[in-house]
Length: 162
Image (cartoon, rainbow, N blue to C red):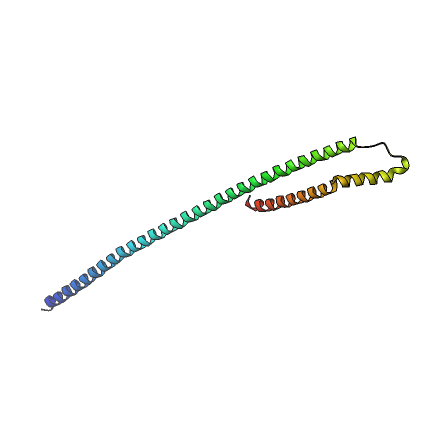
């Protein structure tokens, strides 16, 4: 009498425990599958966001580099134009000086006497002032200083970009 009833209770308890185990395991497996899918989805979303941000950063950097190269090219072209202009101005000024020296040599009179040395230098200084040489030299000097300042500014602007 005890064994049959006890066996029945034990069998029922084992059946309840088995059902409880099976339900717990099924719920765990479903949660594990859902969690793995959610982690994979989050991973894929993060990866897509990283790719998008990286592509945008590369595009921005490429655009900035291209803009800087174009700006440098424009600066170089302006610089070359300024150099050519300065060179042409210097050549023209040198030619005018040569022409003046030629004219001055042909306009010279007789050699002054020994005691007349101061008078001759004053006359040549007066003739140089009348010819406007001093003003031309001052203007040329100012032009050269302005060109040098502009060249230095261009160098300071380009040097950090190299």
